[in-house]
Length: 167
Image (cartoon, rainbow, N blue to C red):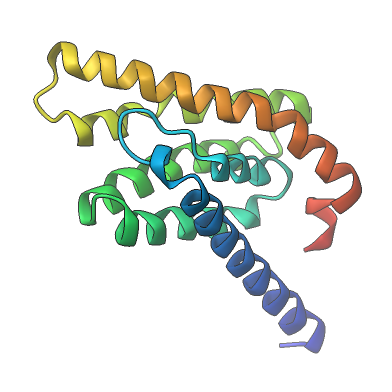
């Protein structure tokens, strides 16, 4: 393997590690409202990184898994929270080349994360019924708010940081 490829892989690994640590730190920062039926995780803004560079999804997913393991609801939260994140990030990553317009990808990413919160509601309210829909509604609304507010912020950050071109 060439030195350039080795350097690029190392940079990608380090960048994803930093994203993972940042996700965990931002989630801990708002810990009283980062878990449960209403979640205002400002760290969820990092989900938009996949819109600009799908290789960055692993840092976000790693952050979710590690946070949920140590500070969330344990293995169930790792499976459901990690699964929800992988599903939404994966859908956005698949659209990278099919949807060239970044505004549309940001909007779709917000929609994917909002809609997929049903997995978290399933974990929190396994018996379903009215409590499921109330929980899903509060989760989806809180996720939508964070993702919608952070989309233009991440767009502006990308203009100066160029997430796609750096790795």
